[in-house]
Length: 158
Length: 286
Ligand SMILES: Cc1cc2nc3c(=O)[nH]c(=O)nc-3n(C[C@H](O)[C@H](O)[C@@H](O)COP(=O)(O)OP(=O)(O)OC[C@H]3O[C@@H](n4cnc5c(N)ncnc54)[C@H](O)[C@@H]3O)c2cc1C
Ligand code: FES
Ligand code: FES
Image 1 (cartoon, rainbow over the protein chains, first blue to last red):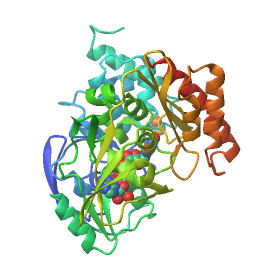
Image 2: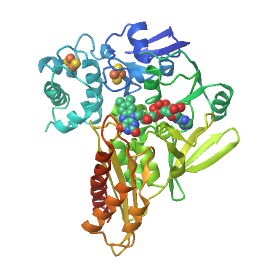
Image 3: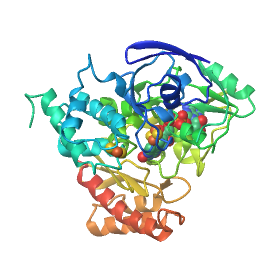
Image 4: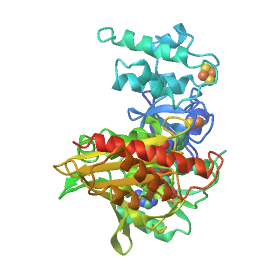
């Protein structure tokens, strides 16, 4: 089947089998290799992307279901070569080591900050509990998200 | 792993979905995909055809004559953040906070969760606790099944392969009803090892007019603890009475040993969680 969707602001059309997951479609067919695959059953969060404004597990969706959707992958977070404040914070606070979980963490954190501009540490921990990181022990990721929240919302910082 | 091959149709009406389900040998409905796609990926399900119902107009949340009616395609996140749901069915709102991570709740649907009928899942137990009625469409028209009759075993329901669950009707809880969800799971937002869902309705004098107790994760279907509920009706709830009812609730469970916990542990935890849930529901019924 033909699928037409918008990824990171650009419209793309490609052919795929109905059984193709959105994760494989984005990563292998369209080349957005920031979409990482760990468990392929919704548990690890590595494949998390933003679909029509809300996070989704790309491994738990079929590509054919994304017809007409607007998708943002980690490749679409920076603007004009400037890292997104979350990306910059992850860099500043050692929020990533191998970087495998990072694209999913960033999508999850970006949604949290859209909904809750000044989250508490508990709220950050609760939100990223659905994304598995094998490297950082989470503390640096929590620090990164808290710092990005402050930079994005200097006024309501706690 | 990757899914085996299947055909795919995107239904644009309930009738079209029903026709596709009837015509195919081994078709499955695709709603949010949050249970089905992982099963496909692991080849634990191998349908010949998927009938995608995401294009159907089945996601409204509306209030009618004492009921809150939620369409089968209502996403968990939409129900969780709905002001109508938190006013009329706060037990459902609280249950959804235990359910999956946000990315899962963004896609998964109420109907998908009920049709999937995982005995450790929250929503089947909430539907049983709140005496929900499920509206099912088949080629011969509509039928209604009470939540208590709907779940027939692990992953088994009253739904025929060529039927669609279209909406869920919840009777709105009366005034002076308190509620509580107490859940034990291995990781926050995972399926429950055991969970207890309780409401307590008090009359003007603070006497328990009705209690509702349902338990997930302790049998092949969600369990409604009727004897425990009866032991509370007509009484002013004391810690001793509540502890007795909680033991009664645990006695109604039918857990099995599995990878995650022995049966005895689940039964003991059902008693502990039931005591906490009834206590909190009673305390919040003002
Ligand atoms: C990481 C992860 C964590 C999870 N955590 C939880 C949790 O904490 N609690 C919990 O309860 N669940 C949990 N789940 C399971 C899942 O989220 C739920 O079972 C639910 O959201 C599935 O709904 P869906 O719309 O995605 O259904 P789908 O996956 O699309 O369908 C599920 C089943 O229902 C059938 N179906 C769907 N809609 C209809 C309909 N309208 N009529 C007839 N049949 C229908 C399908 O054919 C299929 O057999 C989790 C899943 C994942 C991947
Ligand atoms: S690969 Fe999608 S959640 Fe693990
Ligand atoms: S940085 Fe390696 S898995 Fe998280």
